[in-house]
Length: 292
Image (cartoon, rainbow, N blue to C red; front, top):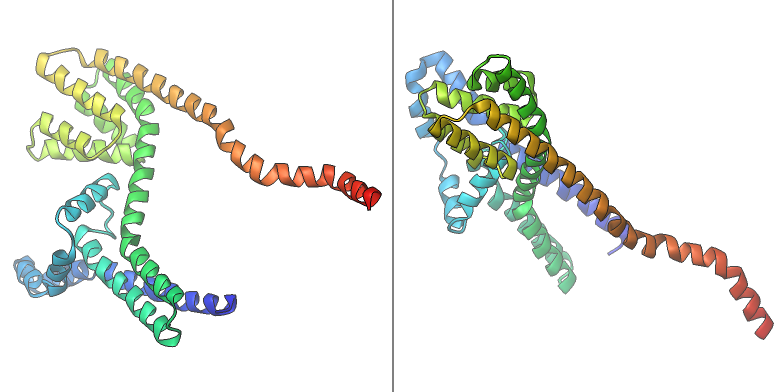
């Protein structure tokens, strides 16, 4: 098939996949619940949810491998549980996207039954099936990196607040209120867990479980131990903030040391051949003319 034909096919498949994903991920259930509550009262919310319990969700869970749903839930937790991608919608969307890939593969195979079309259909099916996973994993990775970068500054803010006379939770609330990143959101959520009656140690441990940043986990362990044994929180914050700053500087130095190695391959594959052609090309032409 010509490149123009592939381009036309992609122009059909990509918008269709996006429409399917938008249709599945739209928050229709919440809108219907709100409308029903406004019209009939909050007592009817459970019945509406029961009436709208889709059979597709049960079928999708049966197709999902054992333990894979827990893995998706972990990735969503690292990504901050975006409202547009709850676990149920992701589980439902994966088979639907794979079905779209299968249909497109069958269309290609019906028009031209070749091995290339079969391979393309299988590849497209697998890609569409794992596309929500890639989006969630990418979002979670970026979010954890942002938390890792924000941690030293947040600890410094909390240390200043504690030394100024505020309590630890008040310092957390101040850092969470002044910040706008994912770490501030996690601090606010931890304080909300404590306010609704959850024990402090469990709330702190839950914050550590929702993150894969090792510095944040170390900070939570130090805070839990300080709360258990009565250690001064200002001393703990000062040590943790200093350690976080040192690790951030070490990570920056590590990236700087890796930069020459990463530049080496583009230099060898892209720049050196062109440079050799420009410098040695005229000399090679002259040599060939002399010997011929």
